[in-house]
Length: 312
Image 1 (cartoon, rainbow, N blue to C red):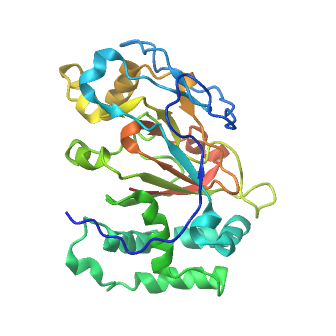
Image 2: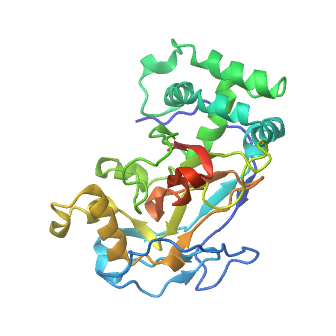
């Protein structure tokens, strides 16, 4: 497959964590306050090795008993990226101030999906033509709400897709009150057939649409909006692990829980990225992390986000 992009827009990333230092916190990184959750992981299965400190959350060292399922040492990197640096300050300002813009943008999810596929290496040549008018609909929403400084539809999609790397696997919009089945369990997204890409340069990009704050206009800030992560010491495939005989007969959710337990996931490993101005987009490598939907988002009475878009 030949990887193609529909454009790369200059941006400045806000790097949250880098590298794998020897059991030391990254300078200048503040640890995120961890809230109590339902504790099941790590109570059985193979005990985890001593974790490595990495600021907000501890890197989970893959147990030696699972060496056959791990790849090279991970870069252990996730990034919180600025909305303003990705799409421009005008769009970022309206995004934070206008609930109607966020709702209208969510309504363009299908158009974004089509335009994202046009630029992906998985698309065939016939998809290069926007026969459904997706550019027009998305472009109209951007211009109506952001004005003359709004990016075009292609610029909007290329700005976010350029964060994914050289291979794009798809786009999904999660807008329901409750996450899809299994989203609350620790898991990875890439299927066994896609592992060549999961272990490559591709990244998962999460753009969250937070619920309105107390004023009804400014967005809610804090935890429970962006996806929760567990950073792994090595590239790892839970799909390969779940091919073991001991996983047979289990449901997908049960397999995910067992995999997290065998890896030794505990509360101290959980990273809950804080959503706020300047760090609205989460970028991470799927093969180096486990992830799940925030528990707060699954409660309709206390939802912290309106929707989340996943590009990968």
